[in-house]
Length: 418
Image (cartoon, rainbow, N blue to C red; front, side, top):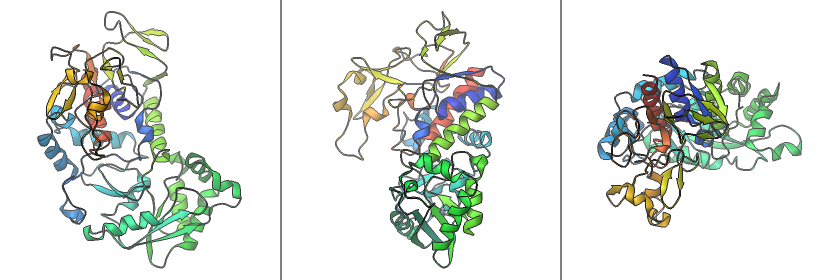
C-alpha cells in the first residue's frame, strides 16, 4: 500500500483481514489528519435547510442517487452495493473512536458556524447531532482562546430550527488559570486537557456558565488526542450534561485523533508501517524501492492522494506521480486524458461553488479499482488505486471525500489480497 491516509489504511486493514501480508509506505499522514474528524458519505445535496431531518435521504439512498447522476464518480464505477459493508468495517476497526454506522445522517456543527451532513462520526461528536439532540444546546467557547467563538455555533443550530434542530444559546467558560494557557494551539490545548484533573476542571468551568435548562454542551474540537485518556467522559461528568465537540478546521485535533487511531489499528493488525520515499518505476519486473530498501510486492495499491498527498503532479501535463499513469479531467462535459495537458487556469472556474475540473482530475479506474492506461485497459492486473488519486469527483466539495476513500480502499484492499 502506498499512502498514509484513510484510503491506504482501510486498504491495508481489508487486505490483512483477507490474510495478506501488508506493508504500508507513506511520506506523511495524508489528508485525513486535516479533516474535520467525521466521515462524509453522501449528503442530501438537493434538500433545502428547511426540510425536516426525518425526510432527508439516508446516506445509502443519497449515494445511489449521486452514482446515477455522476457516472464518473467512484460510487458509480465501484457501485454502492458494498458501501455499507465498507463503512461498517471502518467503524468496527476503530470502535473506541468511531460511533457505529447506522445508515442515517448526522448533522454536526462546524467550527466555522455551518452544519455538515456526515455518515460516520467520532464518539466525541455524537451528542452534537442536531437530528437527535433534545432540549437546549449550549454552545460554550473557551475565553481567551482565539478561534473558539461560540456565537456562530449557536447561530448554526438556530438556523436549522425549521428542520427540527433544538433551541440554542451560547456562553464562554474560563479555562485553566494562567495567561499563558490562552496562547495554546489546538493540539496543545488537547494535550493539556489530558492532564490529570484538567478535564474535570474544564467540565466544572463549563457547568458554571451553562444556561438554565441546557441539555447538551457543544464545545471546541479539542477534547484530547488520545481517546484512551477519556477527556470527553471526564469533562462531561464534571459538566453534568452530555458534551460534544464541533467539527474542526485546520489544524484539526479530531483529524489528528483519527489519523493516530488508524495508525494504532494498523500496527495492532500486523501491518508493517514504513515512512520514506517510494519508487515503483521498475515494478513488477523489479522489487519496489521503499525508503531505500528493495521490497517484493505481489500487488500494489496506490492511495497517494491528489495534490495535498502528492499523488498527482504536473510535468507539462497532469500525471500520476509514481508510475506516470495518465490522468483524466472533465471540462464542460468533455472527458479525457488530453484535457490534463491544459494549463491549470483553464481547469478552474472563477465561481467558488462551480465545478472545478482541476479538483476532480485523477486516475480512471475500472470496477475492480484497477487504474486504466492510455488504451483504456488496466495498466497492470495487480495494480489498484484508492481514495483521492482516483478522479471523477471533488472529494471535499461534494461531501463524499472520506466515504469514497473508505469504499475504494476497502475494495482495493480486498482485491489486492485476492
